[in-house]
Image (cartoon, rainbow over all chains, first blue to last red):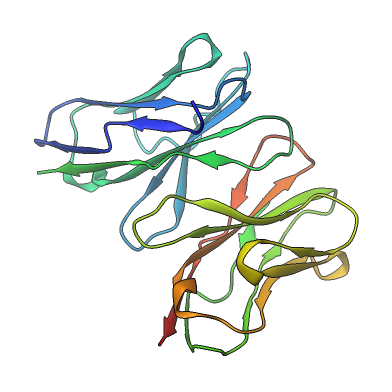
Length: 113
Length: 113
């Protein structure tokens, strides 16, 4: 596709349920980031994948959060036992090569009720 | 630790006023520098970038930024703002020209018509 695609665009879930958020990066982009943007806040780094290297998970806020990237392409961010404070926009970005700019998806707006 | 500072969290200007948003980073080596913009309801998009060469870079919509290595700064400027420039602006740095992106907290810019 032409850009980074995220699905769903909006997700409303009940507290305690698990959710999966999907990111399709631009084909051929080596690195992939997940960020969280809460209302009125900046970008909170969650996790970063680069090629076949072990992901940098240092930003994941708790063990309820996990992510994987299959085949160096599509990535899934999973939040287990969702809490209201997980409500935010989850952004995915991919980077084509070392030092290049990031290309962002439209984000998934997650609302936990 | 490497960090990016955006000193102004909120800026309110009238149309036609001049704009300068500050960005300072902490890293002594080679860096790639970016400014991103997020218009209301839209995804993050690249405004301009600096990799090397002329330290004064021009981006879209009349924006420019100047890299001053001695001050570790990459301030964003526009001589005359428009109402449509209302958005949130983020400065980001890739230290050492790797894949890592370090973000500032963002500056919310409101232009009064």
